[in-house]
Length: 116
Image (cartoon, rainbow, N blue to C red):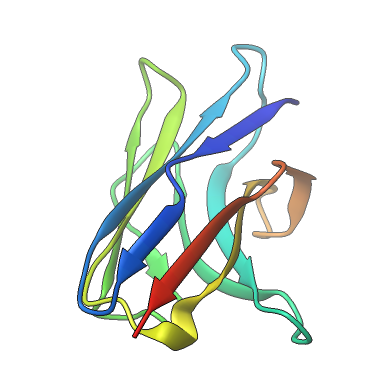
């Protein structure tokens, strides 16, 4: 499984970003998820979606300010971030998920920096 995350960058508080995670064509997973890790903090769950239906799941940290979506034809998952805050600054990782929603493979991460 190979995952390529992109879309991070520097944005001002209140701004938006769209992250993308492209999975290799042979990726076999139940779904895909996004996690983030801020300096000195543990990695935390942001959002997840499976490949077969449109029922997303969100963690508390960005609930209401994030939207996860997928494009099965491109084997790509997106994370739309809005109303960003400086505390959202972190490396955002995508992951392929098993049926129990456990990560089975990680992408390389993409840095999101929110300035005040």
